Length: 299
Image 1 (cartoon, helix red, strand yellow):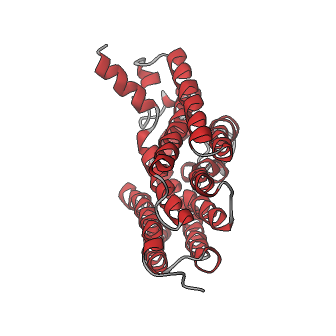
Image 2: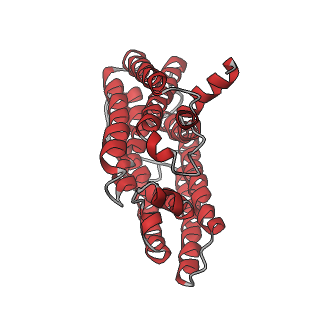
């Protein structure tokens, strides 16, 4: 095997697309916590440390799930399934990434940030992958806590504490995760059933799933608006949260309407999946710009 192919296999184990999404929430949160631009070193240490923590969790997840990955079309080409990376190599790689990430967050930012980074890895690997994923249809709801950790890490890196605005942003991502992931599991329902993973979108009917998607989407949008009175958000964030929220709710309602007519297609489910990513991106871009334009809406 060529060196280039081996390197690509190692990168694939880290789930780089998931890392990209996590970083989208990290830097804007740092800007908002700082009320401006933090030091370059702090941004680099937090972003790189956070990315390596997510990469470590992704590698361990691939190691633990390699048996089920063989049974799913979506994951059958992952490096541990194809043999491009051995289980032992993956374990060493995962541990190395995890140790470096925690050290970088601990010494590059502060010990609290390092501990939160460690917590994020453990939540994804132990709480979600080992305990919840194969046992409950609510796996992605509670397992999604790991994906909420970057905003706490970002806030702690800047302030050396965790305050209410960070908790609100954490809760926004927590509530956003089901309407983001359940439409994807609707499309790949056969895969999850073959692997005996009780993802709600795979084991429940489209009518029930679409209702849950709409309810969680409303909770997400309402929670995002709490940052205005509680977190001191300004008009840029307010406009971004309201406009993107209305659009996102419209997409989930369209999915619900199609489900009631028993007319849900893979395309319509994936439209909500991709739309949820656009919604979160717009929300956090607005959060990043907000400190530089005007002042808080309230006070």
